[in-house]
Image 1: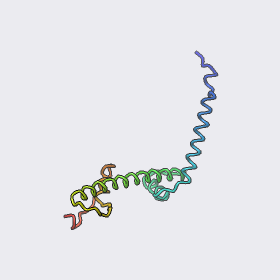
Image 2: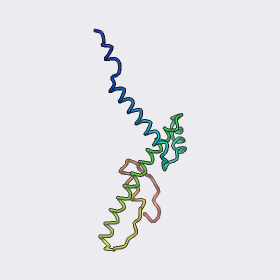
Image 3: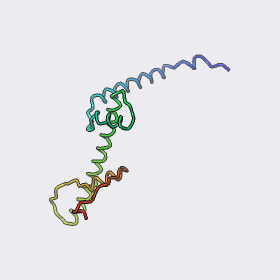
Image 4: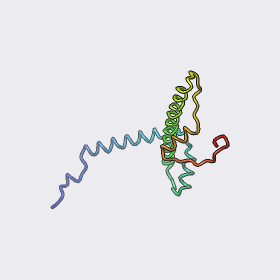
Length: 128
């Protein structure tokens, strides 16, 4: 059973898909280059090297910085939502119209715990 030679060559549709994919990749890499993440690339590169990953392409550390940036923004957003819920319950209990919005460490800890990141810290005298 021999293969049909026409089935081994890419069709026009496959060539078009490959071209579109290449175009999308170039657009994505251009967008990556113009984005400045909260976590500096040098910090990401250092942590990658420290964990044993030798990165030659600087775009890799840029992508890691972008991923860390997304994780940070999700954690902070969730902490703010937890803080608003906590403050809403305090307002209902105290019936005070004016309260300053504050983000407490307990809000951040709850958000981190939801992301499976656990903190260990010593209790202060005020927490005892």
